[in-house]
Amino acid sequence: MARITLDHLAHAYRPDPQGPQDYALKEINHVWSQGGAYALLGPSGCGKTTLLNIISGLVRPTRGRILFDDRDVTDLPTEARNIAQVFQFPVVYDTMTVRENLAFPLKNRGVPRERTASRVEEIARLLDLGRVLDRKASNLTADMKQKISLGRGLVRSDVSAILFDEPLTVIDPHLKWQLRSTLKEIHRALDITMIYVTHDQTEALTFADKVVVMHDGAVVQTGTPEELFERPAHTFVGHFIGSPGMNILPCRVDGATAYIGDEAVALSRAYRALPQSQRIELGIRPEFLRLQHKGAGLPVRLRRIDDIGRARIARVEMSGRPLTASVPDDITIEGDEAALAFDPHHVHIYADGHLVAGEAAGGQVR
Ligand SMILES: Nc1ncnc2c1ncn2[C@@H]1O[C@H](COP(=O)(O)OP(=O)(O)OP(=O)(O)O)[C@@H](O)[C@H]1O
Image (cartoon, rainbow, N blue to C red; front, side, top):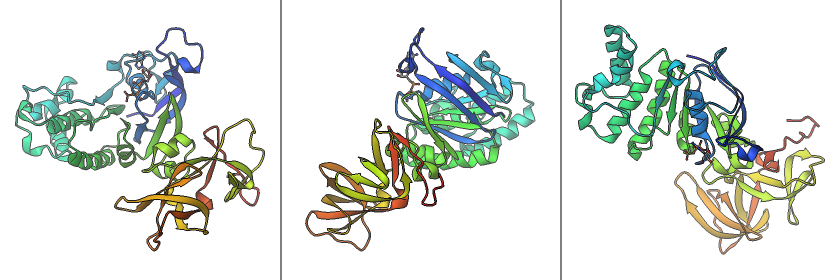
C-alpha cells in the first residue's frame, strides 16, 4: 500500500517535443493518498491510459518523477512496482478453475496455502463468485470472466495500488450497476489505493471519493463528485459532468452583474478587472436555471420539455443559442414564449475556460 506522487510528470510520444502541443500528457503534479478511491475521468484521447501506463511502469515519462511513498520508482519496471492491474477485457486462464485463477497471483508469490485459501474465499464472497469457485473458467460468461479478472486484481493484500482500466466495458448494463457499488464496498473493506480509469461519468462518480478530470493531456480539476458538480473549475468539467451538462454563455461582466447581450443577470460575487483579452463566459447548471412564465426572467423561446424521470428538462433558445433548464413542478407554459430565472449562487464566471473566484459581497475572495 502506498501514497503515489506524480512530481512534475509529463510525457511526449515524439522524441523531440517542442511545445505543450507535442505532449500527450502535459505537466502533472498530483498526490494519490494511501487508501484513496480515485477515478481518472476524461474523453477518449485525453491521456488517461498514458498516465496509467506511467504509474504501472509500462511507459517511462519524458519528464518528472513518480514516487511510491518516498521511493522513486521512475526507472523501475512494472514487476518491481508491486501494482495490480485490471484491464478492459478479461485476463483469465481458461483451463483453471475459478478458485485456481483467484489463487494464482498469491501462489506465484509463495503465499502460504492456508492464507491463500482464506483470501480466495474472502474475495469470492465479495464478488459473489462463491457458487462457481470449482467450475472451469472456460465455461463461464464474459461477465463472470471479468469478475474473475477483478478478483485476481483484488486478491493480493500487499500491493501498492490497484489500477482499473475501464474494467466494466464488457459487463452487461444491469450487472454493471451492481458491480460499481460492489467495487465501492470492496474498496472500503480492503483499504487499498485504487485508481479507476473511465470515460463514463456515472462510473467515476459512483466509485470514487476523488475524481481527477483530464482534458487534452492536462488535469483540469481534482475534486469530490459534489465539488465537480457545484463548482466546476473549468468549463470542460461543467460541460462533461452532469446530464445534461452546464450551460455556457458568452457574457460581459461589470462588478456583480453579467450581461448576456442586453440582458442583465445578478451575480452573488463581484468581478473586477477581468482581462479584456480573455474569453469571458457565464456557466450555470440546468438544475439552477428555472423555466418561468414570460416576464419573470430572461426571455427565451421554449422548444420542448423532456421528462427524464427524476426531473423535467426544458430545451429553450436564447438569441439562437440552445440552453437547458429545469421545470418547476407547478409550472405549465402555453405557447413558446417563456423566461429563465438564474440562481445567483450557482452562476460561475470563466475567463478562457478557467473559473474566476470573484469577491464575496464583503470584499472577501472565495
Ligand atoms: N504509443 C503511442 N504512440 C504515439 N501516440 C500515442 C501512443 N499512445 C497514445 N498516443 C496518443 O496520446 C494521446 C493520449 O492517448 P491515451 O491513450 O493516453 O488517451 P486515453 O484518454 O486513454 O484515450 P482512450 O480512452 O481512447 O484510450 C492521444 O492523442 C493518442 O493518440
